[in-house]
Image (cartoon, rainbow, N blue to C red; front, side, top):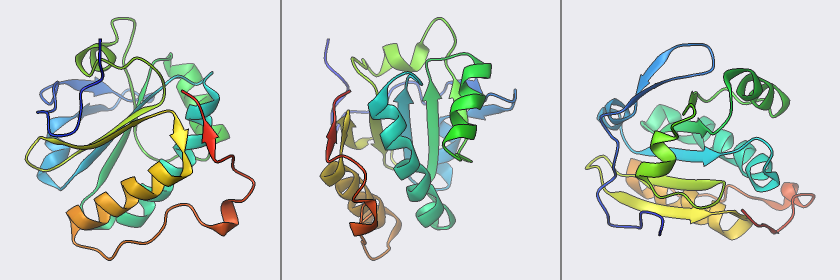
Length: 167
């Protein structure tokens, strides 16, 4: 099994999942606004806990330019709400449920696995685990896709964050 790679057509774009508050989100509909970041995670994963504040930062920076960021939780709604609260996340976090439809469709083998999907439905960027340079690569790619000037997502102010956390 291998994770869906860059250039592949993103699967499961017709899927609709509820967030932790019961609101339905159609994954593919987000592409009508612009690119989409899907971050598949497990709340017990340290790499997920490290990565998601940066995904929130990405949403805050480029949301008005058309970027949508969805977390995709491999946890229950209660655990997901706690995860979001502890990390001050406001991005929608979708609940996969026990069948793990997104995890299976994207062949996720470790968490977090992050996919950037361009408006045309192609995977434009992907990563597994957490590395600071990868977060900046993601930000640069998003900036290019939404027509903004790239700027680092990870800065010197993030010196307390480890360079690498395995997924």
